[in-house]
Image 1: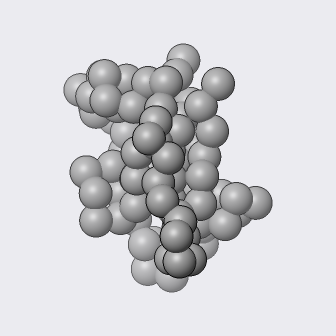
Image 2: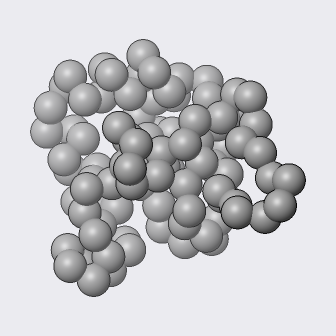
Length: 91
């Protein structure tokens, strides 16, 4: 089962081969910003609603992300849109 990873700037850290970065500047980044659009949980909820509002977005996530680990800057114990992408891509 794919998992969420935390991106790192540590010297020598590399994104694993089967992982995809879903940080903000990528195609899969969350367009909702903490502090502007709410707290982290609210931004993740907005992202879920936004993804589900258009079937083409979900289909694209499934095609591109299914079976892959997803990496973002969020702490692993914090709400993150990558969890939504993992759920949608691997249903």
